[in-house]
Image (cartoon, rainbow, N blue to C red; front, side, top):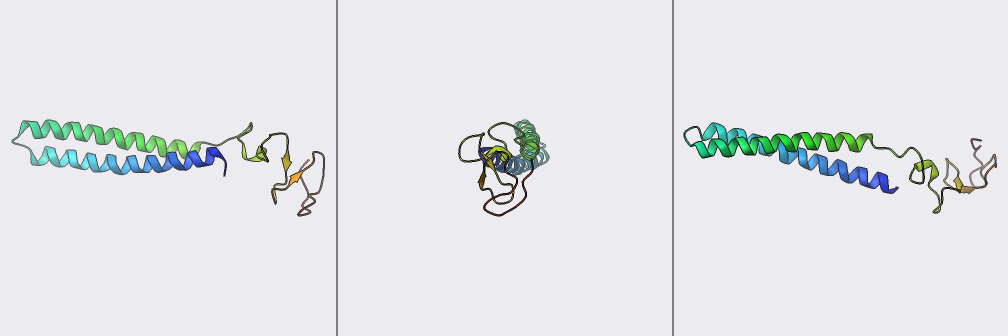
Length: 115
């Protein structure tokens, strides 16, 4: 697993946690407004907690969505370029063994390689 995949998982986890906290805060804010109908400070607190909860839900959705959309497509971090530490080394797509450039068949698994 490359660094992009690790960070995607962390971002998705953080987004899901934000979603849960945001929903809880939103529900708490609504309850504060409903139960504090005679106390203006309770209503103001409920509005503030509700707005913060809504912001948490929105940010959680964005983080979760972005983490599922992120993909390394080129360069040294792209999955097809990962090898023993350099982008100039090619590997077999079937078994991951290092193969020389221009070789048609993998020596390890005998899979036909793409040109």
